[in-house]
Image: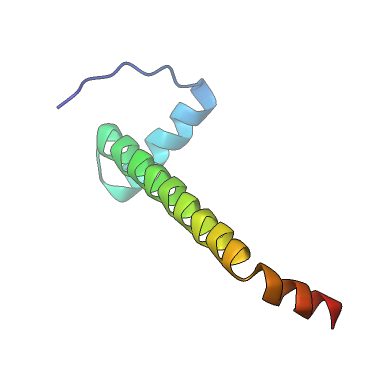
Length: 69
């Protein structure tokens, strides 16, 4: 397991502390969950963008014909 030191602005730290308390989890657990969700969302966006680019390339002629209709 890796240990990191992170500087967090005071206002975000207050939000983080309140959220962790409300969920009955540690601040560390809240940070890990937030980073995991962010990383998964980022990865999902990248996969969706790749699929859209592939469709746009493969179906370029069809999309042009639809635009002309």
